[in-house]
Image 1 (cartoon, rainbow, N blue to C red):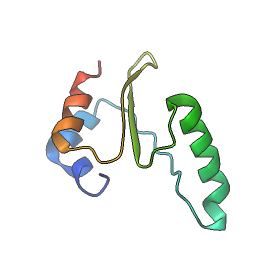
Image 2: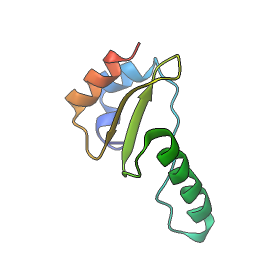
Image 3: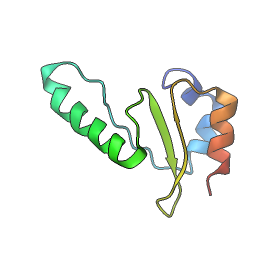
Image 4: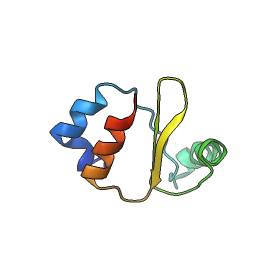
Length: 85
């Protein structure tokens, strides 16, 4: 999604309301293996899944408002973004 859906004008407009947090969980090189494993542990603890890719939207109170693993369509993601207050 980083190379397609995230770059569309409608998604970019909605992103302006959010703070992006990006956690890489699939590093295979020695340089990134430890941090990737730590990130997977954080993902499991906070979202109950090890799915990759994985996307979550958290509202301004810290509550998880939407979460989805795997491929998400632009329409579905836009709807999710717009539902977060």
